[in-house]
Image (cartoon, rainbow, N blue to C red; front, side, top):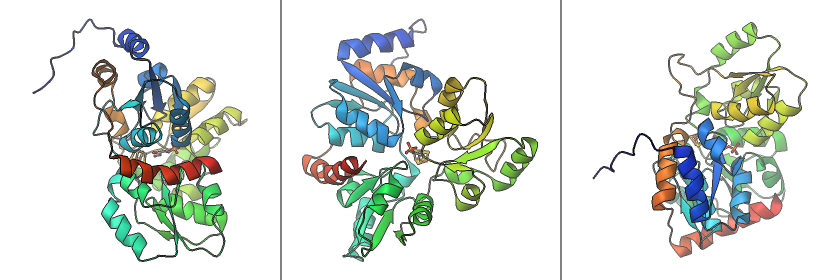
Length: 315
Ligand code: 13P
Ligand code: SF4
């Protein structure tokens, strides 16, 4: 059954603000959300900051504007609160490319290794991991493992390779990648750099190595935002999902931000198709109906919580 269309005169922004009060809800949004969602959020952040915000909140309802693994992490940290995700189909290619049972078989081949999983994975994978990391603390988390220990790193091989270079630690990598960050074209980046010789190239570590080699600064979404606000440079080519440009432009209105070019110039394939499933209308419905909710078996939640807590303690 399809839901009745909303009245066209409905002021979605005003209704979302009203429902937020009524429900005692907090809206947490990732930088990759549409700008109108970011503008309504109580807190905008990268994966680590959002997990920290979810842990701290005392709101009864968390409306999570991001993707499933992020809302799931908020639920793992908040079993007693209602966590809604405007579109339950908002997944992630890294999470779906690393099924829990396959991960458990992979890790069983290396019984003495420490398994570190990027937060972009399912609760099942988290539950079978020793430590979780995000793009902003991956180097620190990997460096915290005793030097004589073998390390397994899943599911993003690009972030894994970047961390290996930064720490000098060898790791066994799960062969996963982000469909958004692997679409940047090196050839078209060079063209853009030629047209904007003063622009600094900055990248998220989920990008492939040839793109990272061309980048003057590499970091998580919040690190990229901080860098552009503090740098004396006036122009930037940004190799990550272009949703972040909204906050960059707000923080530095007089600087120029150019979205990194995808291989196919006719597509917007470096917009995350999962993140962009969330809309104002779906956020309104999620707050109105308190659906769709993130639910999880308690034993799975408890097992997935342990490596997240270890990460938060180290962050
Ligand atoms: P951040 O850790 O920068 O939030 O990255 C999350 C993500 O999904 C990048 O694609
Ligand atoms: Fe997943 Fe990539 Fe989308 Fe981030 S941008 S949520 S890693 S698919």
